[in-house]
Image (cartoon, rainbow, N blue to C red; front, side, top):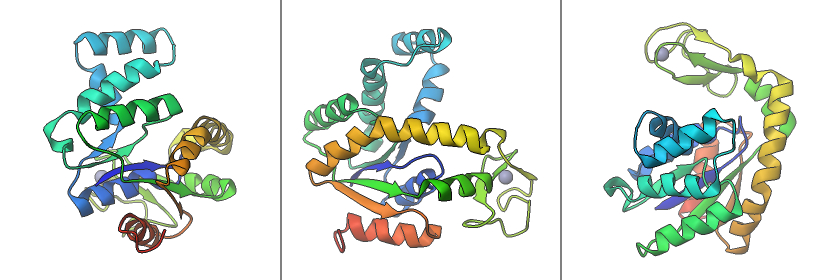
Length: 217
Ligand SMILES: [Zn+2]
């Protein structure tokens, strides 16, 4: 199953991507992870990437596409993936179609997690992270078993400082502006399913799985 998952910061996108990855036994391809990993390498693409980032430039679609294409050409992606954080522009979405077409593959579904902005703000303020293992929680929708303590490793949880509402508002505005055309692109192809994200994690997962398996669409 070839899935793209989209949603603004705080929509629970990362959590759902991880669950889908486990459910369908396909890799969770996060563009953020791929970029971070590429920054540690010393090949041609990584050097170009570091140069753009160090000079404070936006990473071009062309370079982004190349870096993603390299990851998607790996063996573990050949029977599917959950793509998270890419494509972010229509040009990237078209490039993705071409990459897949070259392999006789195509996107099966684009999952759009919709959450009301005010709800996202409240939700982001309630996010908790583990200092040690990087696990994330939400004090309302996905609380740790014991308050303030990581289920995985027992370390103390903290709130991210950039989760204050001003930054959040800006991030959402940028997200909305940038991705709206991408959502329209996939909607026209009949691939888009919009899922209400403002519900408990397992309820959103069920809606996503129903949509992926075309029980409701
Ligand atoms: Zn932990």
